[in-house]
Length: 111
Image (cartoon, rainbow, N blue to C red; front, side, top):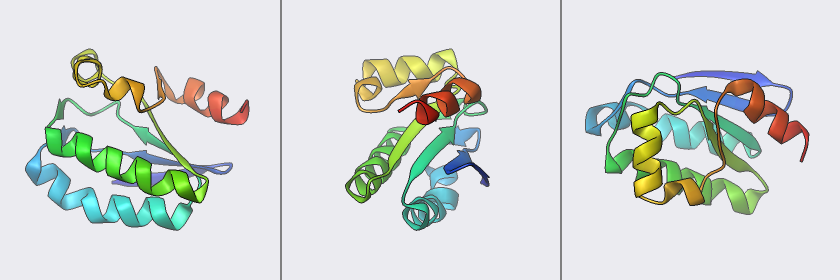
């Protein structure tokens, strides 16, 4: 899991497979990283090509943990099949989702 700080926005690159094994390797590190940052977070999902229900739970748990601290977790770069999963599960109503990194960063800057 790679991270990058752009201004005050933490960008976290998620792995291609967010299945049980993939989640097990990043779940604690992701939570720790987000909680330490306590601010604006973008999850880079451009490489993600598989999302299990556990991944949805992990993302939602982190969103709910950071919001009371004044932060936010937003997503960008969802592949069409992943965007469809978010739409069908209505997770697209819980997260702000952007097509690409530039649009997501601009949205944070313009708030």
